[in-house]
Image (tube, rainbow over all chains, first blue to last red; front, side, top):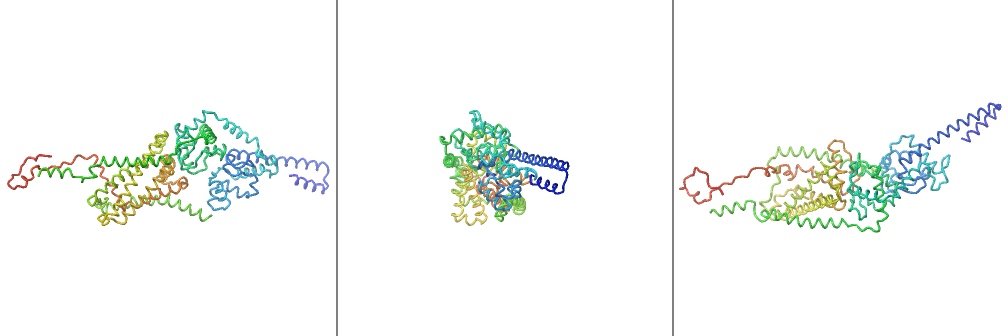
Amino acid sequence: MKKQNFQLIGRNNNKGLNFCALFFIVVSVLIIGNSVCYAAEADQHEGAQYFNQVCSACHTINGGRLVGPDLVNVQERRSDEWLGQFIKSSQTLIQSGDPQAVAVFEEFNSMVMPDAPFTDEQITAIIGYIEVASGGGEETVGDGSEDAVDPEVLSEEAALIETGAASIEKDIILGQNLFQGKIRLQNGGPSCISCHHVKNDAVIGGGILARELTTVFSRMGEPGVRAILGSSPFPVMQQAYLNKSLTDEEIFAIVSFLEQADRDHMFQQPRDYGVKLAGTGVVGLMVLLGVYSVLWRNRKTKPVNKSIFDRQGKSQ
Amino acid sequence: MEPVSAFVNLYNNFFFIALPYIAVIVFLVGTIYRYRSTSFGFSSLSSQFLEGKKLFWGSIPFHIGILVVFLGHLTAFLLPKETLLWNSEPIRLIALEVTGFIFGLSVLFGLVSLFIRRISNARLRVVTSKMDIIVELLLIAVVILGCWIALGYRWGSSWFAADLSPYLWSIVKLSPQIDAVSAMPVVIKLHIILAFIIMLLFPFTRLVHFLVAPLHYIVRPYQKVVWNWDRKAIRDPNTPWSPTPPKNN
């Protein structure tokens, strides 16, 4: 804006406008400039809002990796057009074979970034916010250090993290019960142990269809875990919780339990269900074969109509 | 990467959308056609008279096991909510899974016994068709994968109810949703694909006897078997024909 301002003033001076005209123009330029600045700020604010509502669960800007990559200065690595396409539908871009998209997908454990219902304008606002928050925009925010993300818009996140860290025993126990299904999820979704295992003495061995969650808290942090529980990016989990989403209280309790499980996992000695299940199966089969040979003992050794033959023999 | 991605899409669409519909259509049309054209061939062609002792250790474990395992799959498909409700108590979940696994092993034990019996007995080889061998090998493969899933991807009853039941219902409702099934591990995908292939081949195999199972045997009245005690007297032409019924056994 300043550059434009100087050019206008220079051109006006060259035309020899009088003082009043010059004053008038300067005031106009200031008003227009301010309006444009306000519009840009509004865009940034909107972008920040969307980023913190949706993206910040898995991404930071100069705060390190969470579920997804740190987006600081992402514009230096990818074009705005590419970012727009990826935000709109990462899977479409990955499935189209885009090498950069595939590389990111594979680098982050093939975790699917869900398609966000943003308009093109909203996506532009988000990209703009990322640029500004990275320190590369017209108005730098901070100095690129860990507080590069607008502290105001992250205050809610920070408050929740603080609350999570101070989880009380009651929530942990509720989380245990929800995790293993002793207390059913309010909206009827399957319990977590259907697919996930956690090394914890308080719960039975969980499923192994999906990833073990013992150290998920360390790997993804609370925002990541909460994000996945709230709106899972994984197709299998999406289907399982379709129209059966977890409530905020349930998410909080399960996160509390996972935090505790991560913290205490070194001291846990849960049973090994894999070997026991196999052993029980073999023993059970032996018992079952015994039951078969008792229940159908006649069929094992005699023809089906042997008793009739015998009776006929007696009569002769 | 593009061709690989396109191939994966194609493969998922074929095996989880096209194959189920092909299998169902061939199953229905083929079964009806075979029943109308060869009604007397609509059986398992029992070989019990040719060999009986080994048959016991194959037939009983296989049939009892497959009934329980099939009903288990059917229950999770038809009643997913109730299955999840049952599994909400960890002890019940473990009991269900262990029971399913034991009967799965029973199926495997029975099938392997039947296969060994069929290829090792000269009498049976005479009455064995290529399709008998193919379907038996397919069944063995699908059951091995099933037992592998029970151990390697445990608590299948829960995730089947949560993910595969909706997938199968989406097929029934002609609106296939394959995102979840496409993201499943290869072992589970193979299990599903082989199950559809068995369904596809069903009308051309001995498995058709499943559709004409003599279920009325369970509720039919007793058959009356009547004969004379004194067979010598019956054979004697001097014995007059008695108008009264003979003494029953």
